Length: 519
View 1 (tube, rainbow, N blue to C red):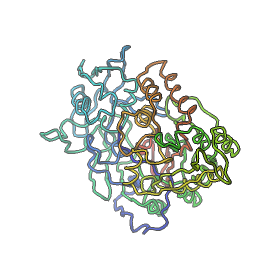
View 2 (view 1 turned 90 degrees about the vertical axis):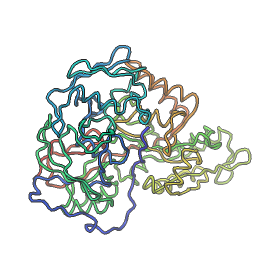
View 3 (view 1 turned 30 degrees about the vertical axis):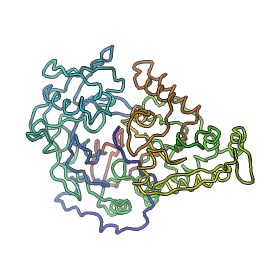
View 4 (view 1 turned 180 degrees about the horizontal axis):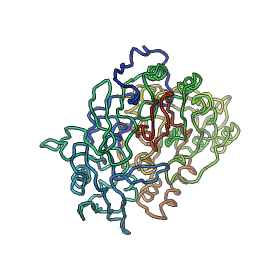
């Protein structure tokens, strides 16, 4: 699976040089330029390398299929597609009359060349369709068929992800096949890029609806407070987005109180408290059950997320496809938590519990470096679990230690986040709950032989039976208290008054520019 950094939750930055950090924009006509704050530089947008920010690709490169609201599949460079009944081939009708921004025609030959750059390549075996790839047949100048060694039910969804599946001009590579320039068929062309920002100009030859303004400036502003003050001062028009430049709930609330437009919509990713399956303490289901009912999700959402989160006990929110049936979010119940421990053989001793001579003590692994704000959440949960009877030690570590301890299950509790749209549910299920899949520093939310079988079966099930197979996975996780979902964080953006018609794209990997006009 892709090595995706964990999501930012709450910023605890308290001071920074504000506008001094913000690169000044000097343009002849600012009314025709959209200025978006981004946390990190875009890089060269090499489609085969993991070196550039993902959100920047989506304005330059198109995919065959685009991800729509709720996981709907929308035409991109393919106008239609058909999966064979046996699942072993997918045919695509390609959009005619499309050219790359360097004038190179997009046709079946260009599509085949692009697809063969990653299909069947070992580095991209984390993508199911790449791992199952057999061959490509060019059926006509505007029609191709991808043949597979085995069915991949999530193949169409996989074709909506950002990298490497999007399309590059065949002329934008050197003699060794290495990308030399970011030349796509999308609505924007890269004019220049550096460590301080990227300038894009409208692609007037774009096949779809063209932007209403001619330029877009992506300004690198790593500090969240500097981005917020840049928006207030009119130096930026848009900030936010989990994969663009995260806007913390605290900062969003401050901006809203200043009269800035803050857009908050249901998110596609869940913050999850994970139990180590290798911890002797966490192998005791009574302990997992006590934690599950002994914490106050509503308080976490209201206090630490400023109301910009929704409590949940389900692995995926309804904003991703095939998310499963909903469970009621229980109110915190101290009596039920203590009863679960007692039923599991734990004996109350003063303010705590013990079993077989061992106290009810757990280690809570957190890293504000890799998961900003996680210590504050851990401290709230520590207080709540102490009231149940737990002794909770918070181990606060740097990113390097977190990346070493989490995949080795060297903790009792720690935080996880699933990947969100467009990678879910198949992405997080395959990565976070299957033993054999290497996810590097991301680790696993939970693994067991029984869960392995259910997840693998669900990922291989297509058609009408897929939803039921997925539900078996969700039921097992819920019934076995294999994970402890906390909240679904809302998607947060802040917009200046000169931006009209702002609407969130389907995922935070997409930059929000479509349908906008500038005052």
